[in-house]
Image (cartoon, rainbow, N blue to C red):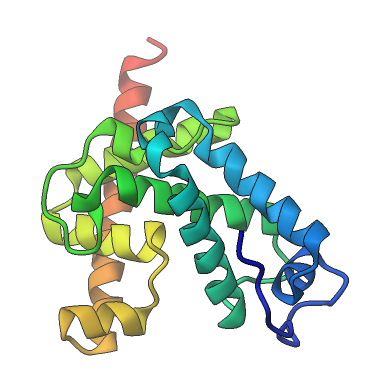
Length: 194
């Protein structure tokens, strides 16, 4: 396992897990490694078991790079962040077609978030509903912004359009998503109590 060898950015306290991870302290590196292993060992990634070691290293590298760029908000839960990076990386390995700009149809398994709670299961169902109803362009844009966590500048560069265009297209896609969710709620009310 490669240990990070950088001085933590000022945004991360040296006594925090993220600060210790960037400084290469064994305890913090071990903790992050265990968090990643928990994700990779889940049943949905068993098809990747031959790649676990490589994926583990790739995820560690992504977390290091993300911290160096100060993308992690230290006010948030670092474990959740690390495991989100791990899930995204594993999903990308399962379905290379879903990388930014992919145009093949989404299936339920690809949209699934590990349902650790009832809220996670509900979020997964809502995301699936929204993406099923979205145009291909909106699917790609929503996936890039929310699932791949690309910023406006990265999307703008990839799409070769101004940042303002990315923002307005994303706003239209989100308006469409809200309409889908409102429609779903009203249909549920019509068929619910009656």
